[in-house]
Image 1 (spheres, rainbow, N blue to C red):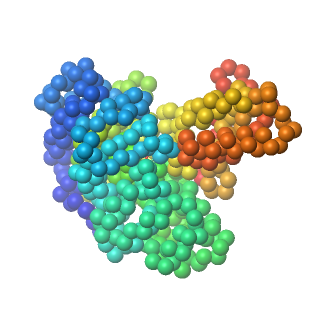
Image 2: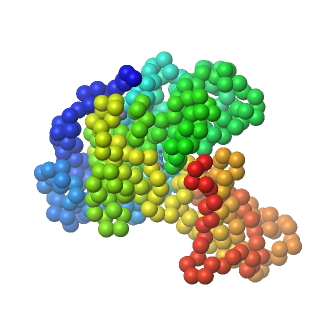
Image 3: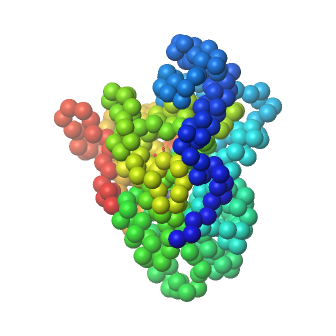
Length: 437
Ligand code: AMP
Ligand code: ZN
């Protein structure tokens, strides 16, 4: 196979040179971080008072970890390192409605980010001749605008179709000869089943490739999508805290995702002891962003479980590869690609006086998509035989949850005492989705 590189010198740079680049960029990023109230305090506590206190790449380990909790505490501007007038964009984690983890970009940050995304896209064999339909949510979520910009940078025709509306997606594919799509793996499976149901012939579309990410999926799922649609599927990993897509991506060898180490420093740690683990061992991925000035984030605990491959990649790139993400070390659920913490749902339910004390969050597969149901016991003052107030309450819960997590759940109301009470630690989440979709 002939592999193509967007930035050949950087992508195939010998490791010592790459590590020298990382050290330089780490110093710069520490300088940016020291301008923020949050890191000034954190870093000075660790004896890092200026960028020059970073002397070797190993010094990254002197930097204390940053967590999602820290980002929330620092909201809204505790992590901003530049004057507000220089900020040109903000993004947030999927499933949040703007507040808790907000990331700011200046013009250069957007350019750098776009460069990494272009590198990922080009590395899968795409060129300016391709037509790219970005079937993912646009908005605060980074997957829309982030992949969009990368596609334009490569010179592809980019169709900002957004997520959902499968029938319209087919129309666009047929009308404009789409060759590449970006979607969650579950939406790709959904697309295939609707294609079959609506009798859309494979011959009527020109699809060759898909970028699939935003949620975990197995190698078997990838193979299934590839087989059903007759395309190549590339795994795309990113998170808003590290800009969004473009952090790690599969090349045409399709064997692990290259982490762009000139833009990010990756470590795998034991989530219990927080000690670093050697390449090859599975643990929590910790990432430092070397390429965003406006909101520097260093040693971020992603909570994602992965490992670094030890053997070099057939494509010749020297940037280490991450294994497919296999799970998380916290209770975050990913529902159709949207991040949801059970506590967000609990907050909504518990804030309503009409609601009782017990509830259950159920996540299951409905066809190939995820379905969220929230089962709630009503309070003692609500009569279960009076349909009107019940319907109103159900709708109120549904709308308020949707406003908080962006997903509309199915809401079931139950009589007081009807939901199971677990002995010991309450089990509020029932996730019956098979590991392998
Ligand atoms: P967000 O900040 O909304 O972009 O969400 C980022 C999170 O989505 C990551 O921390 C992962 O848990 C998950 N995620 C993104 N891409 C993938 C992928 N390719 N495989 C597994 N999980 C992913
Ligand atoms: Zn490779």
